[in-house]
Length: 399
Image 1 (cartoon, helix red, strand yellow):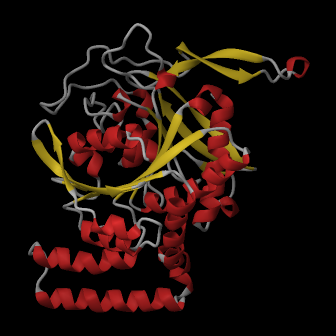
Image 2 (tube, rainbow, N blue to C red):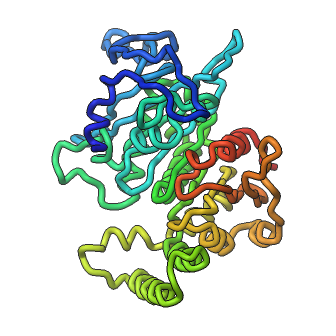
Image 3 (spheres, rainbow, N blue to C red):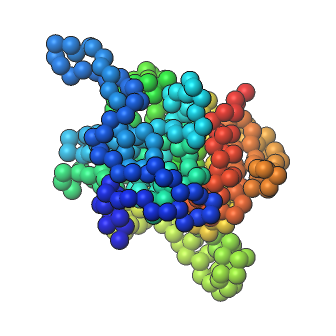
């Protein structure tokens, strides 16, 4: 069913809004993919006689509201990565409104194998929902949003033969770096725009590794950009901590009984032993290797100790997959220059419009947000909290 929905994605009229919080927009129309609009960007002319000349192109009018651009980049011979950009579409625009004065958020879905252009876009915070209804609580109201289908083979990304699929996170990150580099080549104005990588669940693991590689490339000057930080939503950084606390969460919520709890804890210890000894069978080789947390700890610590990037983590308080208690556990294990101060810092309430939407704990470049009334997918569960969190990530100056 999901495949049918997205195969027909660009040939659907928009039905009426089903949520009372969302209104019908009478200006949703079908547009041909080749329709050009008025966002000015610069790209290099491929004409050999004018190799260094810049030419002006215009952004596309895509499916639904707002200016968009999309396409495939060949990240390796035969491996094609799909990306979909929504230019910021503020409901109220000043006369001198400029999309390049707004931050760029790059979204990576989890899984691995869930499509950012499908899941994150239509099920979480894109301008339209799964019924192609206008969503008022969309990140596109305030930010430029770039969805990337990663790894290749996910969503609209594809490979020309099966040997080109990736088998680990490092290969995935290498593909993403090539995709992002080509994106900046296509729209050079975004090189001077503050960029933030956002990811959810397993996507959080990839975001951490991508941020480290990107930052180093930015330092060397091999990529010209303004990477400022990362946002990790219920990140699968430490599966063991998540598994241990999942059992406690399910027991306390009455979803399992004490006998179930004992069995889950027993299984978790067995999995932990297998991961630590690397004694897994071939069928689960890749999965278990990528679930090992020691390497990710080191990368997060490097981001905190060796860079000025913001590392902001947000977790739904009703998340049984990556419980907040598990997230807090691995964060308190991190070895970085402000570790003790961070652990002793009290959390503050996160209040939006006089309503308690969660809590925040932070010091230096590391923050954790507890999000009320939210599960594993916090953006659609509590868009009010997410709006405040995104504003904090993109505007707060770190001393």
